[in-house]
Length: 121
Image 1 (spheres, helix red, strand yellow):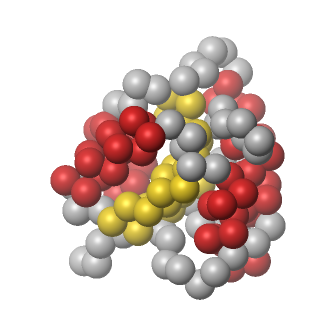
Image 2 (cartoon, rainbow, N blue to C red):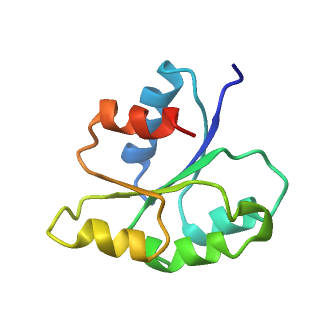
Image 3 (cartoon, rainbow, N blue to C red):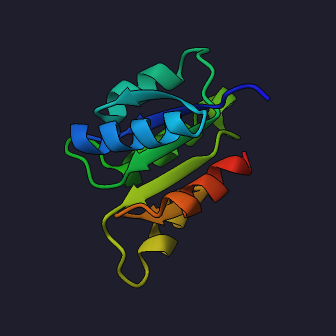
């Protein structure tokens, strides 16, 4: 089985580092962007991206704005977008799904739950 390419979008280097280290150890390839606009530009290319992990709370353009923009990219409509957020209040999961996310995981990330989500792609 080929390695799956995961795009991590997060404005915090520590989150990118932790997710990348964890996912690489589980045989995923990781690409990262520190902002949604940069990520959207990358997603508009033909770069192979099998799934997107996006932090919902970022400056400039948050995940709630970015996910619909990602889903409007014709060749990315079926790319799974998983929201990653520290907001784990009642209704936050539903808000992420309404924004177009295909999945939701709260911080601190339960690695086993994340791997279950990613192994289904």
